[in-house]
Image (tube, rainbow, N blue to C red; front, side, top):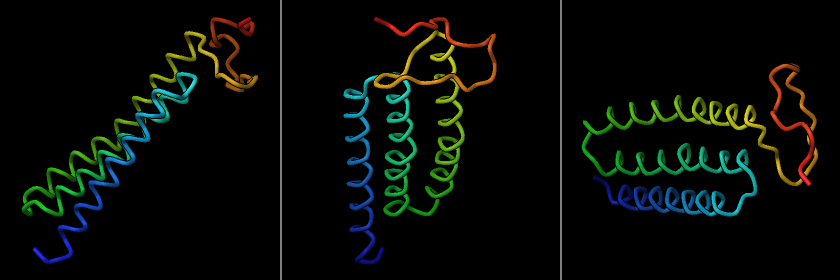
Amino acid sequence: MGPVLPYLADALVVLGVAVMTVGVYGLIRLPDTYARLHAASKIVSLGVISLLLASTVTGDPTVLSRVALISAFLLVTTPVSAHVVARAAYLRGERMEGRETVDESGDPGDGPVRSAPPG
């Protein structure tokens, strides 16, 4: 292992932890389901994969195939699960906070349960 690789691994760990910290802060502070879902998907996409890359830099070469499979699995399943959760929230009638939105889905029979704004 060269003299630069431990520093690269440390930088990737710091990057991953920083992204995850900001993402968790977003989960706590963001106002609605859709914004929180965005923060949660960024935690997985950027934070966890950065940590996995750090383990590849410091680990032996056999770790690379496992990390590649785990990263591919996360990159495929995270958007799919985020879409499923967002669709379920939409069908429950969850509204986006902070602005009036127009339903542009084009499917009038499949809209939110609540049609009137709260309040």
